[in-house]
Image 1 (cartoon, rainbow, N blue to C red):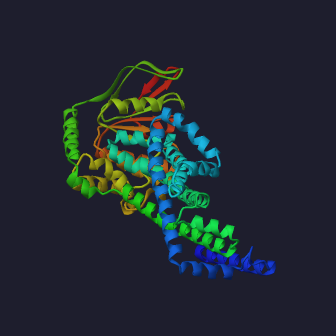
Image 2: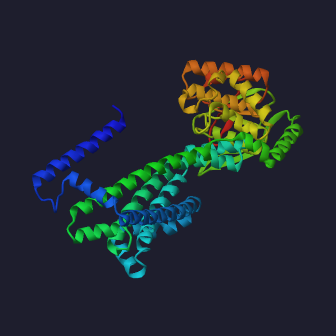
Image 3: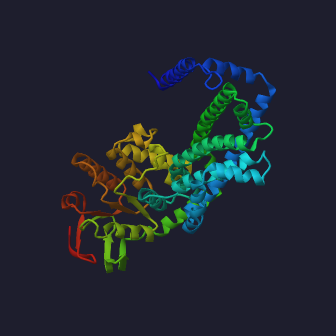
Length: 475
C-alpha cells in the first residue's frame, strides 16, 4: 500500500467520522454534517464573489510570502557572513517570534488600510522564519570547512564553490524555510482578514459566517483555505526542487564556450607548472607553528626528496595534518589525498574528478585525463553514479583518481587509508604504487602506523615531542 492510498484512506475516514458525529449531535447550526458542508462549498463556488475573495486572499498570501522570502534570504545571508549583524537582529527577531500574531494584527489595523494589514502581518511573522533558515544553512560545520579546503587545493573557482558546496548545503534549510514561511503566510493572512475585514477576502467571509452563525459556510471556506494551501505547497515543493537541481547541476559545455577567465587561468597554471618543473624536492625551512597554547613546530627544517614517498610517523593530534596543510598552502604544484574522500555529493563520480581539470585544460583533454585515472582506480564503469551509492573504499579510490589526475608534482596523503579495513588498505596501497610508477611524484605521507609506513614509504621519518622534532629517519 503506497503513501497516496494511505492518505486517501485517512481523508475518507476523517470525513466518515465527521458525518457520524454530526448526525449524532443533531445540531446542524453549530455542527453541520460533512455532506452539508460539501454542498455549501459547491454553492459558494457558484458565486462570483467567492472566487474574487479567493483570488484576492491568494494574492495577499503570495505577496506576503515572496516579500518574506526575499527579505529573509538577504537577512539570512548577512547573518551567515557577518556575526555582528546576526547578533544585532537576534533580539528583534526573538521579540517578533514571542509576541502573538493577533497582537501585531490588531496594531496594524490602526495603522494600515484593511487590504494591506494581512500582507504586513504575514511579512512580519514569516520573515524571521526564513531568516533563521538561511542563517542556519550558512552555519558551516567542520566537514563543510574541509570541503572548502579541498576546493582551495584543487583550485575550484568561487562560483564552483557556491554551486557545489554552498547551495547543496543550503538546500534543505532553504526549502524548510520556504515551506514554513508559506504555511505561516496562509495562517496569518486568514487571521488578519478576519480581524481587518477587507472587502474581498476569504477571511471576511469567515467573519461574516461567524457573526451570522452560518457554520456550514465557515467550515466550507476553511476547507477551501486548507485546499489552496495544500495545493500551492505541492506546486512550490516541485518548483523549489527543480530550481535547486538547475542551480547545482554542472553545465560544462556552456562554460567552455563562455568563460574567458577559464582560458586565462589555464594559461597561467600551465606556465606556472613549466616554470617549476626543475624543482628537486620540497624544502621546509625554519617552520614555526603555534596552535592555541600548543607549539607544534619550532624552527623545523627538512627536505623531502624528489619522486620519493616519505612517511612521517608521529602520534595522533601532534601536528602532522597541520604540517601538510602548511605545505599545501605554500606550494602551487600540490595535490592532496585526505583522510576522508571529501567528494562533492551533488556531482557524479566522473564529475568529481573532471571538475578540477576543467579549470586547467580544454574540456576534451580534461575528460580524457579523468577517464584515464578512473580506469586506473577501477571505477570507470560507475562513472555516472552519484557518490552516495558507493562504499568508503570506493569513495577513496575516486579521491585517489582526482589527486593523480590533477597536475601536480607533490602529493600529500593525510592518513588516507586510516578508516578502511586491511584488505581495502592493501588494495589502495597497491593502486597508489602502480599510479606512482606511471606518474612519479614527490609524496609526503603522514601516518601513526609503522606497518603502513613500511608497506608504502621509501623513506620513514619518526617525529615526537612538543614541539615535534625528528627522532629518527631511515629508508
